[in-house]
Image (cartoon, rainbow, N blue to C red):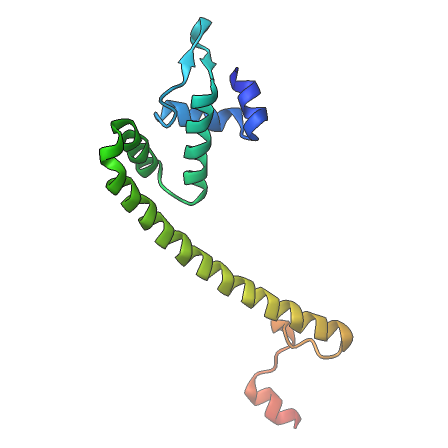
Length: 139
């Protein structure tokens, strides 16, 4: 399978596929005429696995380390497990932060819904805020 076909099949860009193969994250990729990359099922598996790890935020260096460990065989299972556990901790922290951001945005959206229902009460626009001195003069 060519790089173009592979990109379409896996919904990745050709650039991403070239990048991953150049970094050694797809060890089974073959080369055809004119040094063209050719992908079989095994190389598709490596490519997809590497992409998934990158999607979790794992660094290229750690993905490469993971690939290298896989190539060494079963004796590296404990090290691979540790890499995955470390990434899992990072992903959980990112999820927590994303949930906090979402809660903030939901609160803002609710405030704007209230303003839309009562247009004269736009308390979210800093341009409409009065300083404490101005507020006490107008009271």
